[in-house]
Image 1 (tube, rainbow, N blue to C red):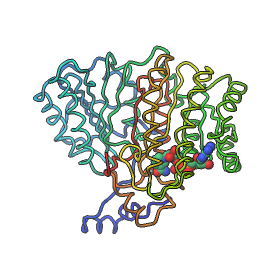
Image 2 (cartoon, rainbow, N blue to C red; image 1 turned 30 degrees about the vertical axis):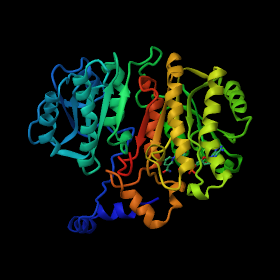
Image 3 (tube, protein in one colour; image 1 turned 90 degrees about the vertical axis):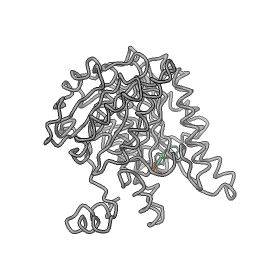
Image 4 (cartoon, rainbow, N blue to C red; image 1 turned 180 degrees about the horizontal axis):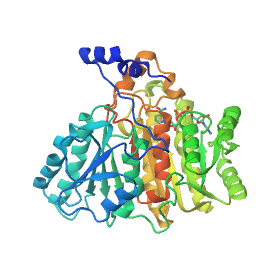
Length: 445
Ligand code: NAI
C-alpha cells in the first residue's frame, strides 16, 4: 500500500513544507538488492582497546570498505564500534568519543553497529558497563534521522568473530532496513552450522515450510527464502487455495492446503514433508489471525480461535516435528510473534497473550534445539503494511505509521529478510531470542 505522506515529504515542495512545519520526514529506506554491495560506502571501525580478533578480516571478506580513522570529510555509510573490552563506566567514554563527530556525516540509511559482550554475572562493574551499551544504542537509534539505524550485537560466552558473519552482514545491509534499536545476542555457533558457499544463495539445498503463505508477510517470507535458494512448501487454508497457488507458482514452490489448527495438522504435515522431501530444514510459523475486542466484550470463540491458531498450533506442530525427527539437524524455526505480545495493545488481550506465549515457547524450546545444532527464534513485527493493518481506520493508521523512530510502517519484505537471516546456516548462534522488526516502535516496551 502506497505511503502517500512519505512520497510527499520526499518531493521538492513537500520536503520544504514539512521542514517549515516541523512535520515528521520519513526517509525512503535502503532495502536489499542482490546486486548491491553490503554498504554503499565506507565503514569506520573503532575499538575500545584490543579489537576482536578476526573482525577486520570478516568485514573485508564481506566486501566492506574499511577505514580506521575519521578523515573529517568522509560521509560514512557505516560506523562500527567494537566495545568487547569495556570493563568500567569510564571505558564507555570511548564510544562517545568515537561516534560523536562521524555521526554528523552519516549517510541516509547509514548503519551504526555496536559490538559488546553479554553480561555474564561474574563481575558487577563489567556487567553494568556491558549493559550500559543497551541503553546507549536504544537512545542513539532514537536520535538518528534519514533512515539510519543503530543496533547492538552482544557476544555471549566463547563466541568470537567467526560467529558474527551472518549477523553483521544482516545489520549492515539493506536487509535490516526496519530493524532499529535492537540487541541481538550471538553465542558460539553449534558445530553443524557452516558458512554458506554462496552469500547470494545462503539457503541453497534447504527445504522450508511457511504457514499462512498465501498473502501478506507469509507470501513475502516464501519469496525471500526462495530468492535465497530454499525450496519452499507454502501452506495455507483451503479457502486461500487460488492465491496460494499463485504465490507458489511464482517461486517454483509447492502448495499445501492445511488448517494448522486442525487436530490432524501435525501428522498431515509430517507425512507430506517426509514423503516429498525426506524432512525439513526451515520451519516458519507465520499463519495468524486477529479477533480484536475489549476483554469485557470478548466472546469465548474470539478468545479461543486466536489462542488456538496463533499459539497452540505452533506448539503442537513444533513438538510433533521434533518428536518425529522431521526437522533435520541444524534446522531452524522462526515463529511470528508481535510487538503487541511485548508491549500490550488495547483490544488485543487474546492476540497479545498468544504472541507473548510464542516468545515463551521459543525460549523454552531453545535448549532442545541447541542439542540438535538447531535454533528457534521469534520475530516480532511492529506496524507492517498488510491486509491486516489495511483494515484500520485511516487516521489511526496514519498516526500508527509515524510512531516509530523510522516514522513509517514496515513492509512485509522487512519481516521476511529478518526471517531469512535467522534461517541461515551461519545464524546458529542466535537461539531462543526475539528480534523486533518495528522501526523502533515508540509505543510501549
Ligand atoms: P494476513 O492476515 O495478511 O495473512 C495471514 C495468512 O495466514 C492468511 O493467508 C491466512 O489465510 C493464513 N491463515 C490464517 N489462519 C490459518 C490457519 N488456521 N491455517 C493456515 N493458514 C492460516 O496476516 P499478516 O499481516 O501477513 O501477518 C502474518 C503474521 O505476522 C501473523 O502471525 C501476524 O499475527 C503477524 N504480525 C503481523 C503484523 C502486521 O502489522 N501485519 C504485526 C505483528 C505481527
